[in-house]
Amino acid sequence: MLLMGIGGGLAVPPLSVVITATVPPEYAGAAGGALQTMQQLGATLGLAILVRVAGSTSRGVTGSADEVLVAGMSSAFTAASGIALLTFAVALTFKRR
Image (cartoon, one colour):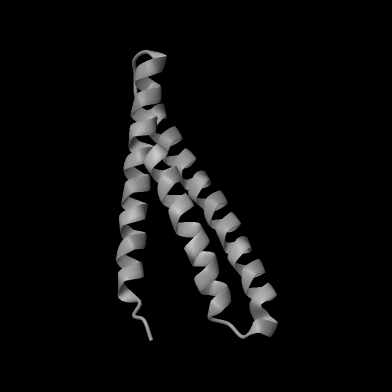
């Protein structure tokens, strides 16, 4: 979680600058608003997906509460890692003009 927090903190400010710098000045406000909206939607959907993965895994595990929690969280973090790798792969396909 610490690594994801640091990565997000390091990625978001430069992304905001790039997004607002690549549009005409009269559209900078709209671009910033769209960026914030997409960040919020992405975080909401991402959390919903990871909670679903953790819950689905937890239902199939028997044992103590700690074992169930660890199994669910492990599968959620594995899914988050896969999503992050997929996002990175997609980002690599975009070329700079």
